[in-house]
Image 1 (tube, rainbow, N blue to C red):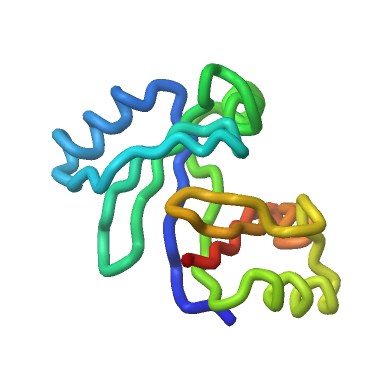
Image 2 (cartoon, one colour):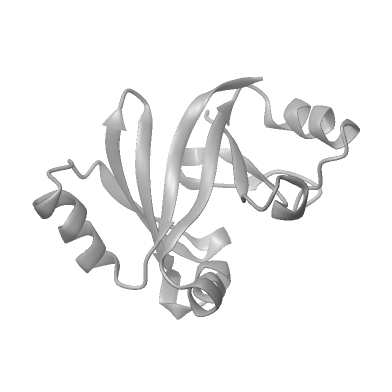
Length: 134
């Protein structure tokens, strides 16, 4: 089911400044950027080890869930994402064990992924994303 840690997402208000900090100051490479319209996010990907990345995520055009997260909690850790072989099967497996998801079906994510979000109330307060890559 879980193949490994895909990324750690950090919510930021100023994507160019956060990117500069991670690339220039910390020396990470920038793998690219992507806007995910369905999630109202702009993202920057910074590889750190193998397929694992840091994902800087900012509100796209000032709206969406990242904007609400920044208003409530400020910048910082947003979620952990695990790469899975089959997101639909993972949802069935975890729902049978009492976990709740934020949606009833996977949605489009960055890099052409299909993603599902485990509700933090069922994971000890941690927002967890499951991503199936194409």
